[in-house]
Length: 397
Image (spheres, rainbow, N blue to C red):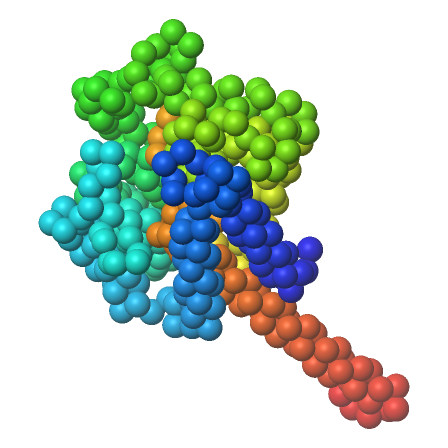
């Protein structure tokens, strides 16, 4: 597939997902008890805030795209993004707004900033910058791997303090994938993961009551007690009610105070109920094509840094999307992760669109490189033709 077509396809998929997200937010918040909407009406406050966030995200994406590949690789810019992420993660513990027992948001008036989302973006930039600079040392020694792991431990610790284990898991998966794609031996990560993962699971899940309840709800949702089990049961009921083609757009009954977080983390359950299995598979298919598009963009990149950037951005979007859908369908334990471009959440949609801006930078660089290759081929062919003509004319070549 040509580099230019991949760029068009990337933006087409994002526009479709964003428009569909606005439709589903309008649907999932309509007739909500306690939402402030009249019977049969739409809670326009959610819709307007999400539309504004998408507009801001589109501007951010265009700004990133306009920077170009050379500016995006500059160390000072990477350092600035990392400093902003670390600063906001530290600040949220001081002035953060608490919701459901978690202090994850900084109240900026009409906009709430979630530093964990910015941390994902910073992780992709910083890891790609470092891994591209150390190059061969990633393959031959621990030097190229240790610094990203130490940086991840610092950022993950700050994110975990906001009671956001889901974002920590996403960042861990993304960093691991980037390190492997950079050429590090797989046993490097195995040696680190074998002692660390069980210890982290013990202290972050089994020693924390509500996370332990989520694990028990995942293992036996129909007999377990607590909010997590109730949430998962309501999600199953919504999905089962949808059947093959759904009950119709806007006709969900689970959203009427039965299904919590219906417009955020569990919006995929409303999609499944209203549009059925066919609609749910179509949404999953769009994300699959988006991931495939991102990986194709990465495979066409001739620059190591740009290739790692595209892989990191694609992994963030893909991991979060499919993890969210697996949570809703009970395939993995419940974690608070949004469905990219569709779930309500300003910080999430802005950062997701910023990552699309990064992918667009790589895609455009691929288009430029392809044009340069074609130009060089034409020049080479012209030179060879001239030499052949001179040879046939009897001139000394």
